Amino acid sequence: MSDQPFFGHIIDGEEVPSAGGETFEVWNPWTREVWASAADGQEEDAHRAIASSRRAFDEGPWPRMSRAERAGAIHALADLMEARSDDLATLDSTNMAKPFAQAKHDVARSVHNFRFFADHQRDHTGEVFPMDSGHHSYSEFGPAGVVAAISPWNFPLMMATWKIAPAIAWGNTCIIKPSEDTPASVTLLGRLATEAGLPDGVLNVLNGHGAPAGSTLTGDDRVDRVTFTGSSQTGKLVMASAATHLAPVSLELGGKGANIVFDDADLDNAVHWAIEAIFRNAGQICLAGSRLFVQDGIYDAFMERFVAAAEALTIGDPFDPTTTFSALASRKHFEKVSSYVQQAKDLDGTLRTGGVADDGTWVVRPTIIEGLGLDSAPYCEEIFGPVCVVNRFDTEDKAVHLANDTRYGLNAMLFTENLSRAHRVASRLKAGTVWVNCFFIRDLRTPFGGVGDSGVGREGGDFSREFFTEPKAVVMQIDRG
Ligand code: TXE
Image 1 (cartoon, protein in one colour):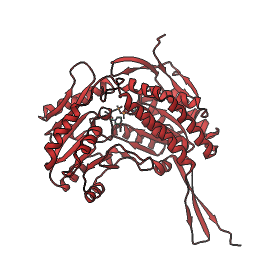
Image 2 (image 1 turned 120 degrees about the vertical axis):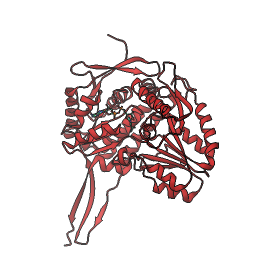
Image 3 (image 1 turned 180 degrees about the vertical axis):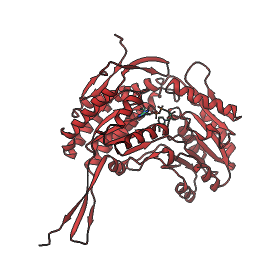
Image 4 (image 1 turned 90 degrees about the horizontal axis):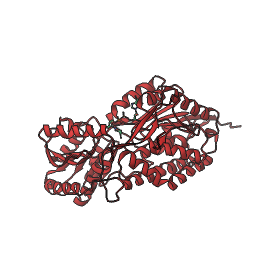
């Protein structure tokens, strides 16, 4: 028996292996070693998780609790997460080479996800529709049922909690399937849910691969909602699978975010956020500012500082407190990102800095490329790594055209000190979120999601309520005596 950690499924409050004993290896991308194993969920395991969540919804206390009781239980889970925040962050850093300080930041945001949605459902209001006909109507938001949530590996804990928190807050039960690359932190979250006393089956964790674990969940007619974050390609499969039983889907998919820097930008601020937008988490962010457009008048000054700031990032062990940038999350992903860097070179792009670290690690250094064609793959496709493709522009119209000329539309950034321009351009950009003079700042009440290949639907605040509940209209006749 190995003494490596093992991450089982959490079903009905217990951690269990797959019924057939299947497991998969869990890698540490910084050391490039296997450090743990996890249960590899098969159809039978998925059916068991669904049956458990179904039972918890149909017969258990959770959907029938008062809103205040549910909020209290979720806050208790958030308290435990805070107490174990170093452990949760350690698992994400080990599992995907996220610098520890960034992993801690993710845990804090994950805790906030739970606290926010606990309070949001507890304090929500319905609407009243006064009618002229001697009736009045009002809206009511009841839980939808069993939610299947499928999450990716780039923010293992944070993306999972972004789905679990509103799902369970609104009285649903939830099965989360983390990415097979990063099962660790979400499994610990499942253990904490048991410890916090959440009723059995309210939060089940099913470990395993996209198929059969994920696809069994999305295609099962006992599942009432499917929420997914991942690639656009897999998103289409998930939507088709959920359509077989007409389960509503919420899909947050890839991105190729435009970052526009106008001549009148505050240069220090623009450089700071441009670095964050493409090199935080080694660029493995759907919201990355991977297409950078810089206006002619500021181009040279901006690029000089941008390149210098990229070169000043400290590459290293994610647990070294001085590290700001580390390896990519898996060998497969390292190979994908490396191949885009190679394509850029083959296409005669100019590498201003960066490139693949040629030392056997899975590091692609902070990379900045100029001179690529607007139809080239590294410019058009989601690389999902620390690779920024830069172009210059002259007019505001041109910048808007370049930014919008993509299949994606998750987010965009723009930097200007001109107030009118900021509003004008923000409103013309085809994107779910536009950040002006900043990046990555969120208010959980706002809609979050994307346009085009970046997704279907919005989550956040009342948008999450719409998705995770069955809104109902109640029409009453007023007895006028
Ligand atoms: O994604 P997948 P992968 C993009 C990014 C990355 C690429 C591939 O460009 O390089 O996708 O990454 C589960 N039914 N993003 O292969 O396949 C899978 O097990 C149900 C952007 O990791 O989309 C995992 O839990 N589930 C993105 C999750 O889907 C299935 C974040 C994501 O995996 C499934 C991640 C199926 N048929 C990658 N197949 C973002 N938007 O942030 C797979 N899965």
